[in-house]
Each structure stands twice: as structure tokens, then as C-alpha cells.
Image (cartoon, rainbow, N blue to C red; front, side, top):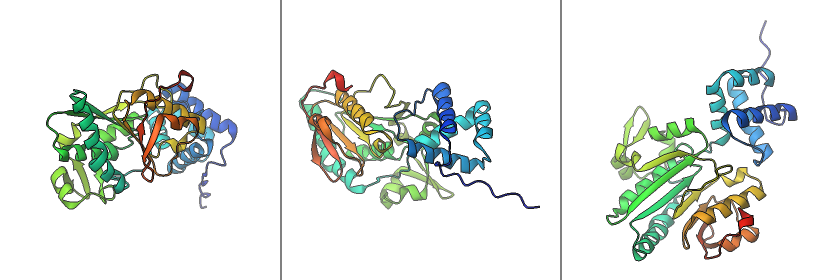
Length: 288
């Protein structure tokens, strides 16, 4: 007899109780609270993992989650990761290279500072912070130390990012001369050279639940906000405003918008690329 076809999970077929049981495990075991995330997005990500595991039902998958910490981490990574590539949206990186980064350097020098911090929030597998590191290396700034911080909620995802190895598809926007200079290629995969890998600090951080945000002069948080409710987006943007100095830069994803009272903390500089500058407006305590 042929075996019955595996159930094709979509996310909409999860009952509310099943969804609550999975999210409760993530909250209890990994301190990852999904209460503020958009429900449908999370259901789709859970369904993706159920399909990968060929799970026949949620009850058996819950038992696996309770016994297998690696599967719990894999589920968390599936929920939190966003697909990326090097120099995704090249026009954004051209603006960073030609306008934003040189200006931040000038302002730092004028203020007598010796360091800058660039923060990739929601860095996933590392393409974004490594792209920043390539820009910084090419700028050849000698009088300032430029720190690159990359954060994500999932430690397994961060471990993969630290290795700095990528499929060729992830590098389709990388010019050949940059590929030859900064990557080692082998068997269809490319690894970022050690000197560049060492320029990026990867750290676990959850922008939704963390009590502290690291100080930064530039924050890239692209294609992360789409998973949050509007209320939570505004709270995160307020928190970003507390950590950015006046004229510090924030870059969102092209599909992400800034609305409501939160706009008083930011001035749009390159609207199409969602590049904003921090205004001098003090952050209201109630917003954070």
C-alpha cells in the first residue's frame, strides 16, 4: 500500500491552541515572545518548518520540540530569519558609501571623536553587516575606528553568520573585483576573508524585548519591521531614536514606512531608499 500523502501545512490550518502551545514553548525555553509579531507571518514560518520536518500533526511536533533543543533553535531561526544578499538594493549602499558614511565621519572628526558604530539590527546570516564592512574597508579611513555590530535573535543564525560562507546566489550584486579581493571561493560557495570577518561583532539581541539598545551612529533595520504590529514598530523606532545621536542615520527596508508622531524624531533624507536622519527632538519617555 502506498503511504498517505503528507499534509501540506500552510499556517492557516494551525488551530489557535496549537499556535499558542508552540509560541509558549519558545517563550519559556528561549525567552522569545511572539505576542507583538504579526500572527499570519509567524504562522507561515511555523508551517514552513512543519513542511520541512514532514510533520503529520502538531502534537507530535510539540513532543519533538520539548525533547530536542536543536529543533527548537531551528524553529526559532526559521521564524526570525529574513532572506538577504550582499549589497541588497544597490542604490541604498551607494547612498551609504557616497553620502551617509563620509558625512558621519566628518561629523565625528568635528566633534573630536575617534570611533563610529554601525549597527545591523536583524542581521540574519550576515550579508548586510559584511556588506558594510566591505564599504568601510574600501573607504580606507585611518583616523577613526569604525565598529560594525550585527545582532539577531537566533544564536544558530549568528553562528552561521560568523563563518561568513555563502552560496553564489547571495553574491550576485558583488562586482567581480570585490569578489576576488574579499572572498575565497570553493565548490560553489564563497567565504569572506578573515580580516573582514574580524571587523564584524555578532551579538544576540532581540529588538522587541531587549532592555538596552547599543549606541550607534548608523542603524540598518531593513525588512524587519514588517513582522511587527504598528504599535510595536513605533516603540522600536522610539528606542532607535534614543540610541542615535542628532544627525545619526536610520535605514529601513523599501517596503517599510514611518507614520504618525514617531516622525518627529526623524527627517527623511532619501525617501525612496528609506534613509532617515535623527532630529534634535528629545524622546518622550512614554514612547519607549
